[in-house]
Length: 414
Image (cartoon, rainbow, N blue to C red; front, side, top):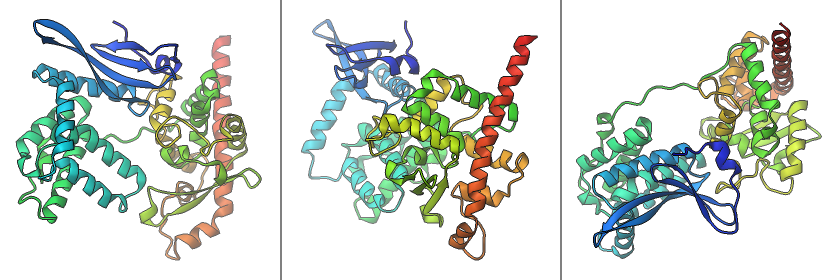
């Protein structure tokens, strides 16, 4: 039985007619004529003593990655093993949702809660909130009246989510349910918040820190893999090559817009969503000569688009999961380093190898500093230092790559 890989999925193109590719155990990738891809689950039911196929659409790719689709598929298989016809249940819930107006249900309250929360959190957090609610709460409980939702039902359902989609996802979803019901309680819609405190009864997530590189030769190997792979000549690949050189979060790098890039001054001006409410709202990122050359390369591909890293997600940009998958595809294991891990690498090696003040590196990462005179004053006084560090860091990365190449040449010569 064939198993799909990220590389295979990227290479699949549209044909004259839609077609499907099997991953495993009833999980298929459907490819439309235009090349759009979506995940589907094929299962069988018996009607009038005859076996009949049903197709359940799980979600679109790349919004739902290969890993996420497999996790969703596992959850659906759990449902089937309990005798639930997942497609019929989905249709029934939609009908109830469209006709139910007398009582407040979880679907209605969840969207009221999300609208209220939208102006209080950054966009990336809100996107994650709505994704968890729509994937793990509404399909199971969306049509239920608020007073009919039971703590035991939530716990049993999220135990399955913990097993199929991860412990952290389950805990975050339970907390999300609690916040929705707490909001309903404050509006007088329920007498009790049955989800309050229930997260502690779910399996505890492991505390996984982003792995970072602390050895020059290993860093050189990673940069070599990024720079010397033919796959990395496309938009996603150039994003991968830029990530080690710029210290912002991967989501912020992928949100880069052409209008904010100044090739003459070699700068990129951008708002910082993650730390906006912690004192850092805007940053000027200094771009090294190597980064400028990479941006000129990608400009040939996306110069007529809004985003530098134009892609197919709903925002019109490359998705961060696509970058992670590309890194894995070119031979960089996730337990060695992830996109976010380069921030830690720059902080550690910037201090240890390049002897740069940690405050300068903090400012390059859009971290709030502890200067008593204030953040704005601190940043204005450190522009030249920041510019200098961004340049020497890029040079250090490329020099590490050359050292790795030289060491490999010596080994081959032996």
